[in-house]
Length: 191
Image 1 (cartoon, rainbow, N blue to C red):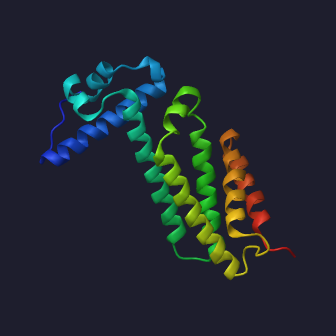
Image 2: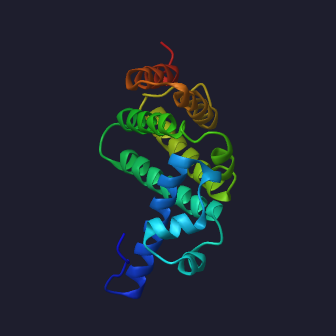
């Protein structure tokens, strides 16, 4: 792999960091957390080992940084769906469906890797952020008459997140969509 270099020092640092994150994630996916070394990451990223250690002290810190970036991207994607034009119910459905597919993709984070990735404060902050904007959509839905008002929005938020966490065990898109539809059915006002 060629040496990385860009126009400015900041761009160069960002490019090196991005290369390290993506290379490490790919190597860990292929060989497992214990099957990867800092030397291999440096080599595959196209940088020296000493340079790698200037950015990260170990593989776990690289994976945590990669995971933080992934979570931020997921939250941005969900926020875009939440903020688009349309009825609250339509936007809620779009957010919940995308969240369910994220949960399905996350299923590959098993065992030791999952323990490393999900112990950081970034996960707690992301969940709080996600809860806030789902609750906001639910509150909009209640005001529009699209979401039941007999259950507190905080309880409905928990219901949605817990129900859709089950998408992690599903193997087809159709099954994920069915789970979303069942979840949405539980949010509708009683007849």
